[in-house]
Length: 182
Image (cartoon, rainbow, N blue to C red; front, top):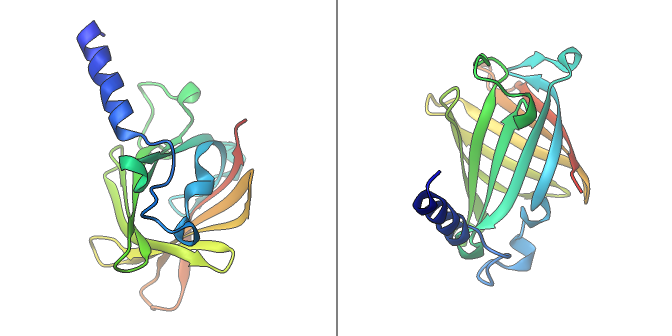
C-alpha cells in the first residue's frame, strides 16, 4: 500500500466512524448502541442447515458511523483467521449492515449485503419488549424476521427466519450465539 493509499484509507475510516450516538437519536430509541464493539460467533444454523457439528466460528464488529446517525457492522464467517482463497460460497459470509435511525417511523431502516453470495435484505428494526425484532422482505417478496434475544451486556442470541408459503410458519435460516470480545 502506498503512502497516499494509506492516507486515503485512514481518512475514509476517520470520516465514516463516530465516537457515539447523535443527539438527534433519543436515548430510548438507541436500539443498537449496546452492540458497539467486537463479538465472537458460534454458528448453529446457516442457510437453514444445522451446522453445529462443523463448529464454525465467526466474528462481528459494530461501530457508530455517519456522525452517530447510524450503526454499521461487519459479519464474518468463518472468522478472518480461518479464511482462505479456496473457501466455497457455502457457509461463507463477509457482509455489512447499515442501520439508520428514521424519526419519521420511529424505527431503524436496515440494509444488509453479503457480496460473497449476493444476499441482500431490507428491514425495519425496533425494540419488542427486551428483544430487537427486524422485519422486512427480500426482493422476491419473501418476508423475513431477524431477532436479537437473550441480550446481556456480553452476549446475545441472533436468529434469522423466513415466512413459508403457508403465510403462518417461520423457518429458521440462521442462528448465531455471540460473546463480546474484551
